[in-house]
Image 1: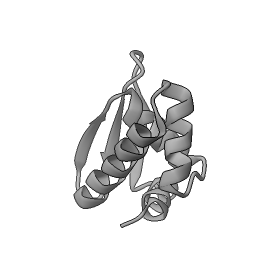
Image 2 (image 1 turned 60 degrees about the vertical axis):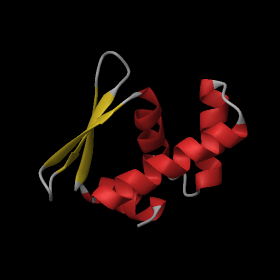
Image 3 (image 1 turned 45 degrees about the vertical axis):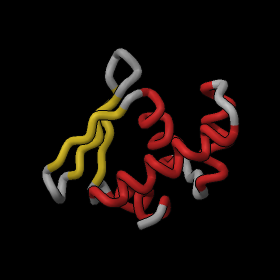
Amino acid sequence: MSIKTIEDHLNAGRLSVTVMDDGSGILLDSEQEALFNLNATGLFIIERIREGCGSVKALADALAGAFEVDQKRARVDAEKFVTDLSASL
């Protein structure tokens, strides 16, 4: 599964996001009736995917800028998030 597939599920309504007041979020997979808790980083990644950010590099660039982490760490975090979410869908 890819970023594009996650984006397609978001656009089709299979995945929906609720943003919490503390900056975290909840991702609902309506097909599997599953909930995923998102920390601020996970929510940020989902929001970038919804906006059309279509590569791990683009996600890592956005993370590095927003969270003031180095590019290597941002790439590892983005890859792990996409891989873990993809495996759960």
